[in-house]
Structure formats: C-alpha cells, structure tokens
Length: 324
Image (cartoon, rainbow, N blue to C red; front, side, top):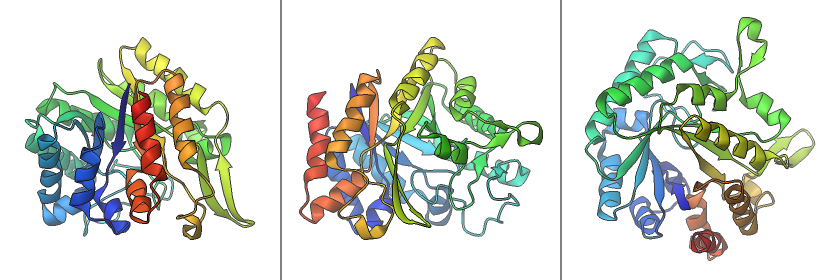
C-alpha cells in the first residue's frame, strides 16, 4: 500500500502558511508519493523558480513526485491560463482546446516543462492535465480529447520512460455526475465517460487516476446543504480498477477526500461535511476496494488546523499511514 498526498503552494499561501516550511514538513511525513503542479500562469510570469525549489527539496528528501503539466492544475480555479492570454471563445460548459493558437501554446509549455525536468530522478510519473474530461472551474469547461492525445504525445516524445497519469472525478451521485460529465456526440445527446475516455488513451503501464469524494457542501436556495456520495461510489471506483488492470494499466486514487468540503467558509474551521474519522473511513473503504496507491487530498488544511492547535487531521493521516 502506498499512501500519498498532493501539495499546492498557492493553497498553502491562502491558508496563511509558510510554503517552504510546510512543504518540508510534508516531506518529513514519509508519504510514498507527493503530487505537485506546474502552474502555467505562474511560470509564464515568474519562471520556474518555485517549482525548481519544490523539486530540489523533494530530491534532497528522496521523495517521489508526480508532476502535473498542462492548462489545468491542482486546485480552484482549475484552469491556469497565463495573464494576457486572450479569453477562449468557449461557452460555459464547452470544450476548450480546439483553438489552434491556444493548443500550440499549451503544447509548447508542456514540452518545455517536461524537457526541463526529464532528468529529475524524483519524478516518477507525469500527470497530463487535471480532470480534463470533467466540467469544472468558473466556466465549467472541459478539454478536447484530441488535444489531450497531442499532449500525451508531446510528453512521450521527450520522456517515454515514465508512465503518464490522467485522472477523472469519479462517480459521486447521479446529479453531480450529470453536472460534471460533458455532453458530446450528435446534438449533444450522450454523456462522455471520463474514465472510459482516459482508458482508451492510456498505453501499457500508464495510470488511470480517480478522485473520490464522500461529502460535498453547497449553498442552495434553502440554505447550506451537504450532499453525501452514493453508497456504491467505492464499488464504482473498484470496477474501473478492474477495467484498467484488464488492459494492462494501473489505477490509483489520486484524490481521496481527506478534508472538509464546506457549504460556507463560516464553518470551515468547525466543519459539518467531513471529519477526521471520515478521513480514515474514506481511506479504508478505498483500500478495501483493492486500491494499492491512494493519495489523500487536503494536506494544506491539516497543517492550517494544526497551526490553530487542532492536530486531529494530521493525527488521522498518520493513523492511516501507520495502518499500512
């Protein structure tokens, strides 16, 4: 069993935490994998200095890293187009990436980034985009599969040794699945299956990533509400695990919910959606479903709560790691 997490300097800073000190603490926890992102907008404006530092620190700590590349990255607002980039003429909920100019620019960014880091021994896999076939972000865009194939080709042209990972927001409930999964085909009559689309793209040894959440808060007309995932969400993920292995691919849980998803910032410090016990329970049900690589989502939140004297979240993560 490999237990990992994801780390975002931007998210860390939003919590008011010192980025470098917190990342060193994360590296000291003994995670099997830590996922970080190459943020296109930041690199276009300020260069690779922050990402260089993260990877240097990981190499010193002998920490395996998954690096995400593309126009989408870890954390809201999902899409990280450089400042000054003309706003794509894509309607809300539409498919981004068909514009040749934008496609050429993101392909150049991916090639530049992979070329810069291909000799880094700490990088164990490249993640191409983040949930590319789920509608997300302020405009609910999703990425053209033809562009994602070209992005994968760009990665392989520079580094054919490491596996490619592509992830999807996995089954939650019928309503959220419908909101997340784009329509396609003639007259938009069909719902695209992100998992199947990814599996059809992956090569032998590549990885299908699944993001599995148990509770999502939202503000509704009737006030704050917490939606709970269907009871079959882990079983649904397990079916994709079997499908991946049948094709000679692997499947990981790239995001296992391990922090609250609150309906309001007012309850963020005292959450109503998700607890440390839920962190453990969510991990255990995914491990029982057969997954041997599970990355816990939300480590910046754990450190934020610890800074306020609440160590329950860090303790829950540590308990999961000890149990494996």
